[in-house]
Length: 425
Image (cartoon, rainbow, N blue to C red):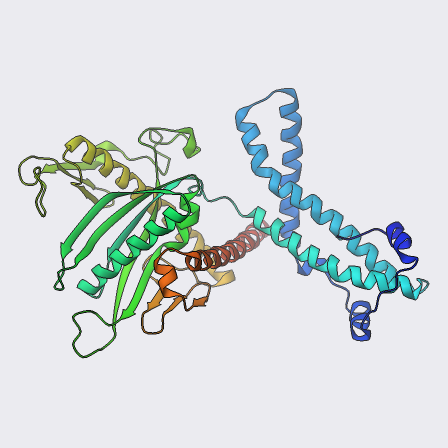
């Protein structure tokens, strides 16, 4: 922690610190520019948020309002980080003045040099916290989620790998005490007599589950020798993973806006625009299969989004599940459309490095026992632990979340630049 001049003088007596000459020269000749740690536009945004925090605090002191209290909590992280930044910057400047003052005793300079190293590290750490706090919270981040898993290219091998991913996520949830259930399961027998996945929808309940699993959306590629391969050749298959927000069955304050009844809401679906078909369930056995009209298919006509559900013997339960999945898919699609539009506007500033749901994000190589995430660039040779939902999967997911944070900061800086350009016209 950075200490002030008076404390330096108290520590000075009886304490001599050794300092490397080359470090001494670097500190004296290359003063760190704090603007290189955090852009002035970010600091200005933080100051505006801090001012808004102060105003809300005054209003709440006069009259308590739940919405204002919630907003105050959301602004507190940035306000606190800005206060820490100001204190650290002041202490950092004081240390630089001590070092640059020719009248300062050499031994006091020695102490200041050591403290300046710590102060620089503190500033870097606080700058990261402050910048991260400025990123708008994803509107679905606090929600539970649905994870859709579908095999892509690779035939039956892709279906088998989809099953591996289902078990991986189930094990991950169990280890993290997240409740996971099968909202939808569509399987068929493969040529090797193993059950292969056609489509699975996992429902993962727990506050913030969407924020945890958001990094898993994309195409997962597997490279391995299939059981049916007689010549020992490695095949490449792919599985698509989509992470969707999971919404309550009815309107809820949890969604943060007037939800299902507001046509401007991401969560709104006009029942008049949905075609509903009921039919007899099909599949491998079960008393309700081909005997009752329990299966439900919903088609959202404007987007041609289709959801079919036949997991339950009850048509009503299948209808409820189908509506939940339909609403989730449409809300996610609307969000992605807006993000794509923003990405196009930002492309003139930061390029077009966005990864869509059709892009390969991760490779699982059986022969090398290797897993590589192509966004964060991390590679681990702990394939078994990853497929068991172990700590190595946590490591990969955390690296991707850090990568997403960097992209969010780039987007935030680009938005600030675009705003400046528009205001200057």
